[in-house]
Image 1 (cartoon, one colour):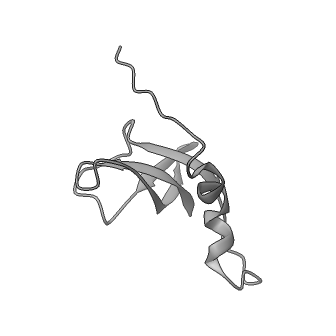
Image 2 (spheres, helix red, strand yellow):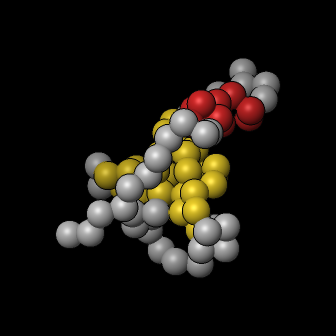
Length: 80
């Protein structure tokens, strides 16, 4: 499982988000059932990942890196 921020046109900016990734042929591939397109493109910024151990009692800790950025980070989009 990965957590970070994702750009969404519905929210007109970046929002906290979680998605899963699978290791396929040596590369981590994102899968996100809440997004209508395949792959992660440049709209996802992963801040943390976790294998979700059985000892995890709260998913809140997975979003702490997102909360640390709130109000302190700026994202500048540049094109090729």
